[in-house]
Length: 253
Image (cartoon, rainbow, N blue to C red):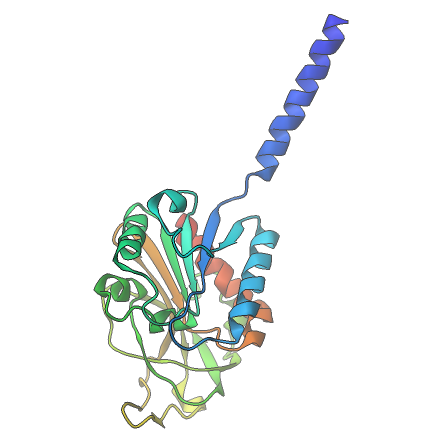
């Protein structure tokens, strides 16, 4: 009887260990959607798509909902922070320092679309994003160009992929060492726009839409795609986001 009990205990213990290992996801990312300006209709679609992306690829996507919960202690569980269509000044000085320490500790950042229209007055953040939003023309369809086929997740944009987007024009680089991986061909759409207080003429031969770089001890990835809700159901874009998130969270391509 004692031997039977021992074997039963051993079996249950092994099952518990296996279950615990199976429950342990690859990593967690924190998803921030706060806006103090324009609210993108695609935010809801983006949240669902990223959560499903995590479920399919065995990592957790946690939506940040507590305004007072952005602390060093809370962020310990995450490997990356994702800004999905954020706008304006969304963090106070204490929260800014928390994100700075998070990145300096070797963690990652992913910015999607209007993450480059966020926190203009925070120099550390603008350097992390790399370039900030300047202006955009009306939504148009244009051809995309893969600049670095060695970076994963870009297969769906090969062969001059046509893409319908709110195509951002960016200001100058805020830092050096940006690795551009995706651009748009300005000859395939009209980049000119005039808002009165600001104008856009396009960016010329190199009009980047996505890039990554090592930054202040951590990693940062940015993509300008993601204005339309339908973008997030496109496999090409989902693979693009997965590659960026995986690199930001793990440092692996």
